[in-house]
Amino acid sequence: MLALNRPGQVSIKTVGPFDLGRVARLHRSCFAEGWSRSDLAHLLATPGGFGLVARLFDRKLAGIDAMRGVGFAICRVMGTESELLSIGVSPAYRRRGIACSLLRVAMERCLLAGARAMFLEVATDNIAAQKLYEAHGFRRVGLRPDYYQHADGSRSNAYTMRCDLYVACGTAPVGGTR
Image (cartoon, rainbow, N blue to C red):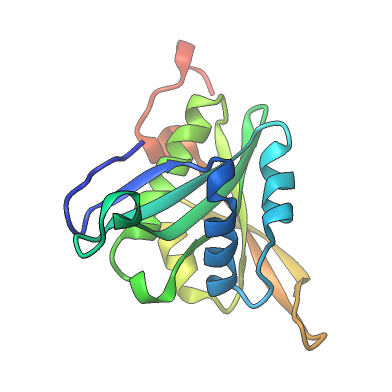
């Protein structure tokens, strides 16, 4: 995992049991319907499930508190396919490359676990996220009408996107086949 301890540097590590509260708070800061600690624990306990947390070193704080949680990614690997279930960066820390780092590490970890492709859903009106995914090799492969349900009862569409992890990560498949 990416680990740096200089001011302004991001450290990315696997989510552990003591990170669940931090990741739940981050999820709530990113999405209207945030996931709870229990939701996260359930997802991470499923076969192939894993999470990443991005921390930013803050020299104004001391010890473990100096590593401020600023982003997360939740994924699962199922055979040769993987899915990015959720990714987010605290609003105060966006546009600093943290989502790019999280996505890259998540893709590499899925590839190492045997996945050849990664899928995700993204709201059709979330242009910033679509640009991030496209920059990392994702392409639209479908449309899911009324995929997201909002607190007010309204619904919105999502694109399904797919990425070939071998191509995106610049790694040749073992044995030369896909």
